[in-house]
Image 1 (tube, rainbow over the protein chains, first blue to last red):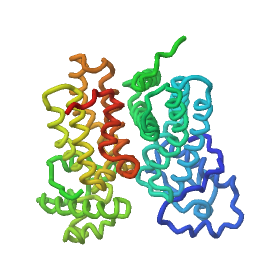
Image 2 (image 1 turned 120 degrees about the horizontal axis):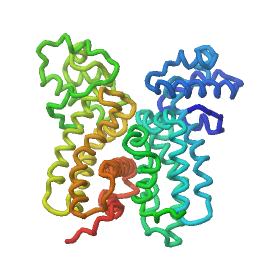
Image 3 (image 1 turned 135 degrees about the horizontal axis):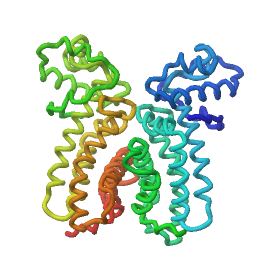
Image 4 (image 1 turned 45 degrees about the vertical axis):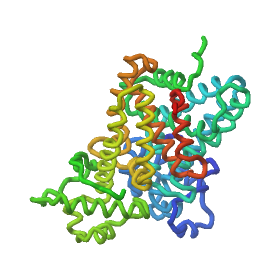
Length: 219
Length: 219
């Protein structure tokens, strides 16, 4: 999770059941401070994972006091939510050009898969944190892990619907088809990152393309 | 998670990084006490989920003291690990007859899918707890959620290999094929349980069968 940028989405969802007390007191929040804390947390997750992360070390690395941390974040769950929201927004930005590509559904899906796996590879710890640690966190928008999948499904579904309308793929429930693609790719990406000795990124990419019955890539 | 039975597997894996101090002091553990605590926790998860669970209420419902709880479990993570181990063992028992069915790969997979979705439906809270809350827990056998998938993949892979050897399905990496099937079914089962208004169990079952290119069921 090296390159954290504030995306404008940060703060859109929050952990459920936690009163929003601390941040109420902050009259003029500094977006740079929030970004600095998120970036420090991302670096620390990159080396030790989310579970072992302590608020004290995040504050120290960001060069802010623990008190300042709590002016911006309600605690570790809130930090995780904001990191995952930021990570998901950046991944969606990487996927958008693939979905907008001129050409067949197969070409779009192939390019999106390449972008997805590239993003996961560039920031392995951030990716695993986003797709695994979010399972236990309830937010105002449901389980964090469910929210992540829902974001990607919302982007993919119109592409799937267009392909069905053009007769490129069999007509079926476009939500289930999109859920299946997002769920399958996410699951296999986790497996691949944790078993690099079992298969390469190219092996995995070809496997998913065969599973989705995409025609072999030419050239 | 109503019907918790001790499976003999309980205690096989433990949360990582936690010294096994408390249970060392227990010279003659009573399996009935452990089962009573697990059963009480399962009931409470059924009504309120794992996140909100407090050790005090588990002990109270099980009719044991908090001190006794800590003689058997190191804390909430350890409790979750043992619940998930138990849940997974019971699900594998339900799937075993399907995998051992005489007949085609399609028949076996169809029967296994039916058993899997039936098990998830019978104990929705226990299923969601097992497949979602385990993401954040590191155990002596890796991430708890990864361990769960690995157990099912180990059972499915020989069935897949046999189908490839018989020419029933395309030859491919049997581990990736098994990971894809387990990951896809788990993901779609979560979606289905959380969106019962979107599709019925029969809708989902037919969708997975189409996705796996299984021939339509006769009769």
